[in-house]
Length: 156
Image 1 (cartoon, rainbow, N blue to C red):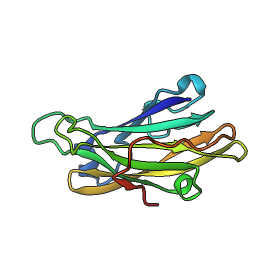
Image 2: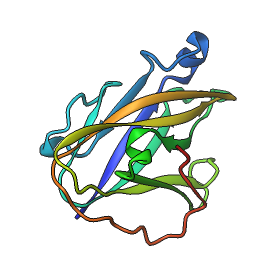
Image 3: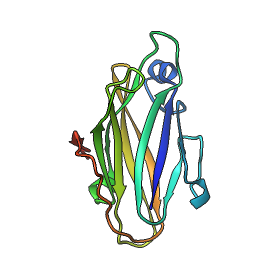
């Protein structure tokens, strides 16, 4: 069992100017060795093999004072509705001026190898924007419990 980190970077100023995350969101995970593809693009497909705990780390690419903040508000979509992915929001100490919240979750599948989509609902400045990401479950395995009580559960 290992922990999987997915970094979600957003060019917040460009996304707000266009009114969309299209062309302004970049995802990277630490699972390239297991076959993840699309590193550094909006089209990341995270490969899951064996029991995995997932953590989403979100950042804006604009670091000047007054730049719009980017936060992950919810994780939903197909993988959540089918209980393949069980995301939760957790409370932690204040991080870099943030709210002190982070998202983690577990993956649970007893199905054949299949690709599933999930939705990241991001708040960019004061605007809610969504992006659809992908996981590829490579083998069946059991659910992993997170050891920290959640602040709220993801809503599909």
